[in-house]
Amino acid sequence: MLKYIKNHMESITGIEIYPLISLIIFFTFFIILFWWVFTAKKSYINEVKNLPLDS
Image 1 (cartoon, rainbow, N blue to C red):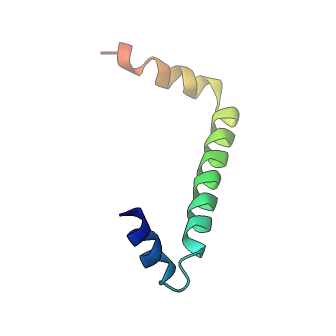
Image 2: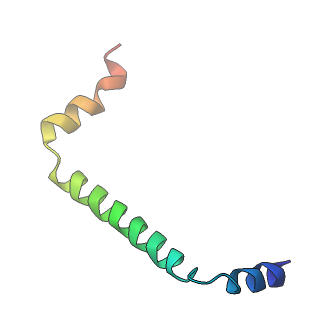
């Protein structure tokens, strides 16, 4: 089964760029997420943290 998929994927031209694009999107998302976490204001974090307890 895997041999069939591998041979089929090798026959498609230009497919080798898709894993690279997905890797770049993945790392970009997590870099932006880490940046947001470290630069978020403490007041906003405390407000969101207490939301479940406000009801």
